[in-house]
Image 1 (cartoon, rainbow, N blue to C red):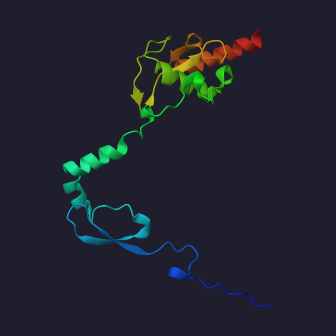
Image 2 (cartoon, one colour; image 1 turned 90 degrees about the horizontal axis):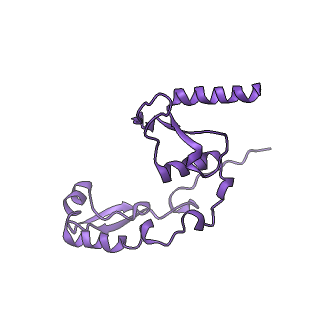
Length: 164
Protein backbone atom coordinates (compact mmCIF):
# COMPACT_ATOMS: atom_id res chain seq x y z
CA UNK A 1 0.00 0.00 0.00
CA UNK A 2 1.53 3.28 -1.07
CA UNK A 3 1.69 6.15 1.40
CA UNK A 4 -0.13 9.26 0.40
CA UNK A 5 2.33 12.09 0.15
CA UNK A 6 1.18 15.33 1.78
CA UNK A 7 1.67 18.36 -0.39
CA UNK A 8 2.11 21.58 1.54
CA UNK A 9 0.12 24.46 0.17
CA UNK A 10 1.75 27.84 0.40
CA UNK A 11 0.47 31.37 -0.02
CA UNK A 12 -3.10 31.77 -1.24
CA UNK A 13 -3.53 28.00 -1.67
CA UNK A 14 -3.12 27.42 2.09
CA UNK A 15 -6.53 27.27 3.86
CA UNK A 16 -5.13 29.44 6.68
CA UNK A 17 -4.01 32.22 4.33
CA UNK A 18 -4.81 35.60 5.86
CA UNK A 19 -3.95 37.93 3.04
CA UNK A 20 -0.26 38.77 2.76
CA UNK A 21 0.68 42.44 3.03
CA UNK A 22 -1.24 45.69 2.82
CA UNK A 23 -0.20 49.24 1.92
CA UNK A 24 -0.78 51.88 4.62
CA UNK A 25 -0.03 55.60 5.03
CA UNK A 26 1.97 56.78 8.06
CA UNK A 27 0.00 59.16 10.31
CA UNK A 28 3.19 60.98 11.23
CA UNK A 29 5.11 61.63 8.03
CA UNK A 30 2.37 60.79 5.46
CA UNK A 31 4.66 58.32 3.65
CA UNK A 32 3.33 55.00 2.36
CA UNK A 33 4.60 51.77 3.92
CA UNK A 34 3.79 48.04 3.73
CA UNK A 35 2.80 45.83 6.67
CA UNK A 36 1.57 42.27 7.07
CA UNK A 37 -2.24 42.02 7.17
CA UNK A 38 -2.03 40.55 10.66
CA UNK A 39 -0.37 43.81 11.84
CA UNK A 40 -3.03 46.01 10.28
CA UNK A 41 -3.22 48.26 13.36
CA UNK A 42 0.13 49.82 12.46
CA UNK A 43 -0.26 53.61 12.26
CA UNK A 44 3.35 54.69 11.84
CA UNK A 45 6.06 53.60 9.42
CA UNK A 46 8.66 53.12 12.17
CA UNK A 47 9.16 53.30 15.93
CA UNK A 48 11.11 56.55 15.53
CA UNK A 49 8.20 58.11 13.63
CA UNK A 50 5.69 57.00 16.29
CA UNK A 51 7.83 58.47 19.10
CA UNK A 52 8.12 61.79 17.24
CA UNK A 53 4.39 62.01 16.56
CA UNK A 54 2.59 60.54 19.57
CA UNK A 55 2.65 63.89 21.38
CA UNK A 56 0.96 65.86 18.60
CA UNK A 57 -2.28 67.49 19.89
CA UNK A 58 -4.56 65.92 17.25
CA UNK A 59 -3.29 62.41 18.05
CA UNK A 60 -3.67 63.00 21.81
CA UNK A 61 -7.25 64.23 21.24
CA UNK A 62 -8.05 61.18 19.10
CA UNK A 63 -6.71 58.79 21.77
CA UNK A 64 -8.66 60.60 24.51
CA UNK A 65 -11.89 60.45 22.48
CA UNK A 66 -11.64 56.69 21.97
CA UNK A 67 -10.67 56.00 25.60
CA UNK A 68 -13.67 57.64 27.30
CA UNK A 69 -16.24 55.23 28.60
CA UNK A 70 -14.03 52.17 28.22
CA UNK A 71 -12.42 52.00 31.66
CA UNK A 72 -13.80 49.69 34.32
CA UNK A 73 -14.61 52.63 36.62
CA UNK A 74 -16.99 54.12 34.06
CA UNK A 75 -18.98 50.93 33.53
CA UNK A 76 -21.71 49.69 35.83
CA UNK A 77 -20.08 46.46 37.04
CA UNK A 78 -21.70 45.09 40.16
CA UNK A 79 -19.21 44.51 42.95
CA UNK A 80 -19.35 42.75 46.29
CA UNK A 81 -22.69 41.32 47.39
CA UNK A 82 -24.45 42.78 44.33
CA UNK A 83 -22.30 40.68 41.95
CA UNK A 84 -23.96 37.59 40.43
CA UNK A 85 -20.72 35.69 41.23
CA UNK A 86 -20.96 36.42 44.98
CA UNK A 87 -20.79 33.20 47.04
CA UNK A 88 -20.88 34.70 50.55
CA UNK A 89 -19.28 32.52 53.22
CA UNK A 90 -18.94 29.55 50.82
CA UNK A 91 -15.78 31.23 49.50
CA UNK A 92 -12.65 29.19 48.77
CA UNK A 93 -9.39 29.47 50.71
CA UNK A 94 -7.66 31.44 47.94
CA UNK A 95 -10.72 33.59 47.25
CA UNK A 96 -10.93 34.57 50.92
CA UNK A 97 -7.27 35.65 51.04
CA UNK A 98 -7.70 37.67 47.83
CA UNK A 99 -10.80 39.30 49.38
CA UNK A 100 -8.82 40.15 52.54
CA UNK A 101 -5.97 41.82 50.63
CA UNK A 102 -8.36 43.66 48.30
CA UNK A 103 -10.54 45.04 51.11
CA UNK A 104 -8.13 45.40 54.04
CA UNK A 105 -4.69 45.48 52.40
CA UNK A 106 -1.72 43.50 53.60
CA UNK A 107 -1.04 43.14 57.35
CA UNK A 108 1.39 45.77 58.64
CA UNK A 109 3.28 43.61 61.16
CA UNK A 110 3.51 40.12 62.62
CA UNK A 111 1.47 39.72 65.82
CA UNK A 112 4.04 37.32 67.31
CA UNK A 113 7.52 38.75 66.56
CA UNK A 114 6.39 42.30 65.54
CA UNK A 115 8.36 42.17 62.29
CA UNK A 116 7.17 44.97 60.01
CA UNK A 117 5.76 44.18 56.57
CA UNK A 118 7.66 44.85 53.34
CA UNK A 119 7.94 43.47 49.84
CA UNK A 120 10.58 40.77 49.48
CA UNK A 121 11.21 39.46 45.94
CA UNK A 122 7.93 41.02 44.81
CA UNK A 123 5.85 39.36 47.55
CA UNK A 124 4.51 40.83 50.79
CA UNK A 125 6.31 39.15 53.71
CA UNK A 126 3.46 39.24 56.25
CA UNK A 127 0.57 36.82 55.58
CA UNK A 128 -3.03 36.70 56.75
CA UNK A 129 -3.24 33.84 59.28
CA UNK A 130 -6.55 32.28 60.33
CA UNK A 131 -7.14 32.21 64.10
CA UNK A 132 -9.66 29.40 64.53
CA UNK A 133 -9.93 27.58 61.20
CA UNK A 134 -13.23 29.23 60.27
CA UNK A 135 -12.96 30.53 56.72
CA UNK A 136 -15.65 33.22 56.73
CA UNK A 137 -15.57 36.81 55.54
CA UNK A 138 -14.65 38.37 58.87
CA UNK A 139 -11.35 40.21 59.25
CA UNK A 140 -11.49 39.58 63.02
CA UNK A 141 -10.85 35.88 62.26
CA UNK A 142 -7.42 36.74 60.80
CA UNK A 143 -4.09 38.03 62.11
CA UNK A 144 -0.91 39.05 60.32
CA UNK A 145 2.05 36.69 60.70
CA UNK A 146 5.46 36.41 59.05
CA UNK A 147 6.05 33.05 57.29
CA UNK A 148 8.16 31.55 60.10
CA UNK A 149 5.65 32.48 62.86
CA UNK A 150 2.77 31.39 60.59
CA UNK A 151 4.31 27.93 60.17
CA UNK A 152 4.93 27.54 63.92
CA UNK A 153 1.40 28.75 64.73
CA UNK A 154 -0.19 26.30 62.29
CA UNK A 155 1.94 23.37 63.52
CA UNK A 156 1.02 24.10 67.17
CA UNK A 157 -2.65 24.42 66.20
CA UNK A 158 -2.59 21.05 64.38
CA UNK A 159 -0.77 19.42 67.31
CA UNK A 160 -3.41 20.71 69.73
CA UNK A 161 -6.18 19.20 67.57
CA UNK A 162 -4.62 15.72 67.84
CA UNK A 163 -3.90 15.99 71.59
CA UNK A 164 -7.44 17.01 72.56
